[in-house]
Image (cartoon, rainbow, N blue to C red; front, side, top):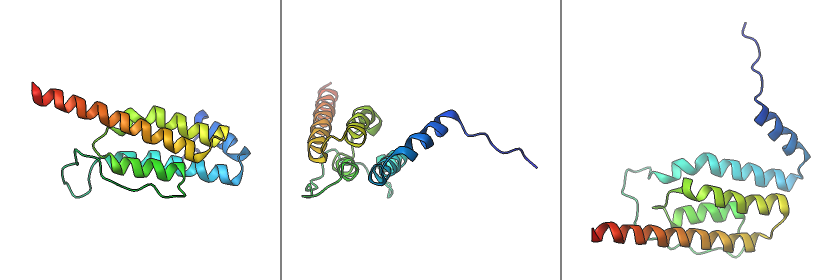
Length: 131
């Protein structure tokens, strides 16, 4: 019989913090963790099609969670490397979940973040095509 696996310190800390959160905050943390787990899947089209080089117009719903906005923006800008956006997106999400920043304000900042990343992407591609 194998000895029980010891839980890594980071997982124990996450469990301690998670246990102190309200139900709503737990749902937000869980939704964000699911988003992080799925981000790599979103970068590669399931059908093997080429990724669009232009943003895909997806209208922002009136009522939208921050996690849903991140998913929508990832779909709007499939050409962007989500790992490059992860740090700033995570920071904004943390501000929403842990510091109570209003969802609409955080979503506005996320939209600006993705739009700026797309502008850099488009400029880089224009420079590469000019070379």
